[in-house]
Image (cartoon, rainbow, N blue to C red):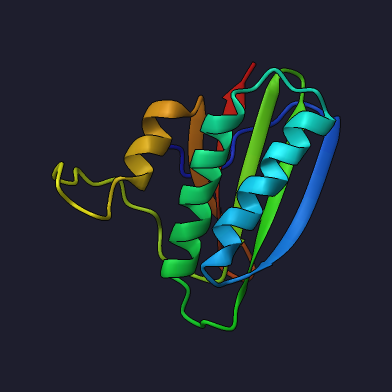
Length: 136
């Protein structure tokens, strides 16, 4: 996992959404990612992109210090890479752990690590952003 955001190619498309930090946010975020993939006609596996987005949004909400917070979803496409970022107000760094097979939580970052091209996080003025990329 990279601590700093890597340099990105020129962004050809970008969308930003503000989501209320509640359980419906993950479904809403999945819908936005699928819509972007369709609208931009991207050669990206929409199922994988939606799954990883859902994991990031769920983590952001579950670790939010204030239930009245919003999370920001940023979807971008540049070159041959889709990048999804989820911004939240938590300052806690994501930690990749080995969850047992019967655990109900703790496997989100394992999925991120195994299915994305790259992932990481960076600090923001209001908290942090966790991102993943998928290449075509």
